[in-house]
Amino acid sequence: MAFPKNFLWGGATAANQYEGGFNEDGKGLACADLITNGTHSTPRKITEYIEDNYLYPSHEATDFYHHYKEDIRLFAECGFKAFRFSINWTRIYPLGIEAEPNEKGLQFYDEVIEELSQYQIEPVVTIAHFDIPAYLSEKYDGWSSRELIDLYVKYCSTIFTRYKGKVKYWLTFNEINTATLNIGNFLSLGIHTGACDFINQPEDLQKRYCALHHQFVASAKAVELGHSIDENFQIGCMISYMPRYPYTCKPEDVLLAKQEENMHSKFCGDVQVKGEYPYYAWNYFEKNGIQIDITEEDKQILAKGCVDFYAFSYYLTLCCSHDKSVDKNGHSMIGGSGVNNPYLEQSKWNMMIDPVGLRIALNDLYDRYQIPLMIVENGIGAHDNLEENGEIHDPYRIEYLRKHIEQMEKAIEDGVDLIGYTIWGCVDLVSASTGEMAKRYGIIHVDKYDDGTGDLQRRKKDSFYWYKNVIASNGLELS
Ligand code: BG6
Image (cartoon, rainbow, N blue to C red; front, side, top):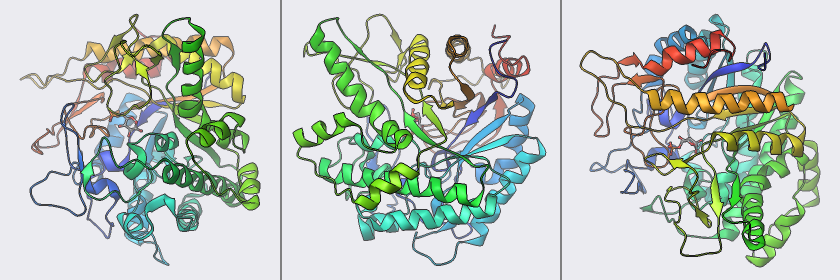
């Protein structure tokens, strides 16, 4: 049997896309609450304040805030061993600067964690999943200011102390390498952009990489602090990992793929696992006129705050080509020279579907870091059809997940230490890139639509029953 006995099968979500209740019980406004809905072809917008004529999908999302008991019961019915969710920073510190936390916010997560423990479901908690207090964006220009380091560490201290002995697995920043993309400006770094399109925000590489440096320092401080609060804590990084293939075997394409993979997919993990900046980053910074103020103290903090495990999301791979005439990939979140792979199919939202790429990624990552790996996001966004009898048949989702799990099994046989797998958006939620409901990932359907309508009823899709069987057989039965 390839999968270890205690393998963490489960699902993953994020507060800003799932929780709703955006202004309830003292919660503050987050940057994510200022991003409107959009579609695959119409970009979301960032607004300065909440405007009446826009729909903001995070405000209600799919309402975990009022459905958590029902949802966790469904996760338990499916056999989940783990559930990844994020704590919303603005529920705990509404502005980010308060001396005391918001007790009602903490109570909500007390209840969620308690509910999970009743079903022996292991919480995997993301501390910051695109949920920066909007006040910190306005006052400090987000993570471009060093002030945010201590504010974040204070927030960590509050939740670490509160959930000590109850939560073991923590992730410091969701997809921290989103900061290397233009789209990361506001969502991931809280850099104050003013009103603009979510795609193609004002570009300032210098600011972006400094802000990312501050997140590295904050993450390392959180790791050290967490271990001092509870020595059983396992604190991980979380990287959006997209392998890059050369489009041809021309050495120039091979080199380009390596360079892009380094700076997009490897850089952040290298800092967080190895505790120092990798050599190739300095060259990139010099070529792009980026100067980062890394103090001696920062260096020591990074070296002391290495993560315990490497968590990552995996959706797709890309090819890199020097040839400008090759089809550029149309996925809205990806920068760089990414082009389509002629050997692969793509989803309706231009994700190149590549299960074997997951085995390659797992081997590469384990070879590089030699620490446990956890896949904390994987899945396919697709249109689902709710039939009149309430059934949802989603064979495409089953096929996608099955093929990826088969490759995980092979990677474990290769010798990779893979400890868990939480499928993304296990229950339907709002898409981060497009703000749509139409792009569904869930094995549980939620009656909620792009125009904000829907009664929020939960229904099990065919993939729910399939995944239940996968978990019950510990990955043996995939058909
Ligand atoms: C990751 C994020 O980028 O991918 C999630 O961590 C996001 O927040 C997921 O939802 C899927 O992307 P999208 O744009 O299809 O929602």
